[in-house]
Image (cartoon, rainbow, N blue to C red; front, side):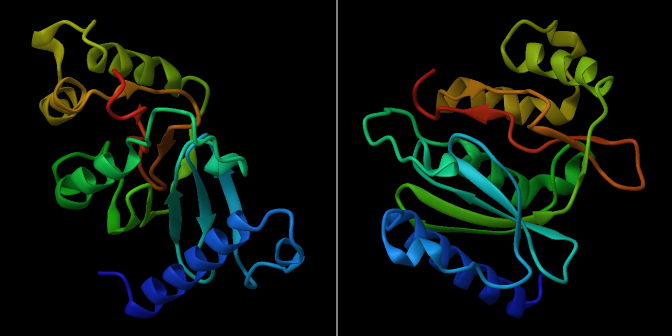
Length: 192
């Protein structure tokens, strides 16, 4: 259970980020972000931020280009991370390879944020395992070799029309274990 103060701090931070993103050319963009927050990474749809004083990460998912500071309203896809985060919120205990998602909140049709565990970067050799999982999710894997924990993810690919997007930025390692974690294995919901 995440402390309610952390949830409130994250909600306030998301509001600041949304405000800054809407006004990138104005003076508001020169104001500093709240103290202690630092960006861990970003992609086409979102950003990951270290939550001050907690071993947790805030993930913000928005429309295409939002994570790079350039919304592309003509891009037809939407981020699949909110769908995956909802799955993990309720199922992370079923596999060491799913991230521990503690909170997910949709704030608009195109924006969602969530709180999840802080993970470590993977080593280059971890990509071999990740590539194998990507093949399975893409339908190229041998059915008898599909680990039980992956069946719901395979069903997501098929039923939700998501694209598999496994690369070194979307896999991480759980600290203190050897578990490789799929943090964001899908993209482009509804376009596959």
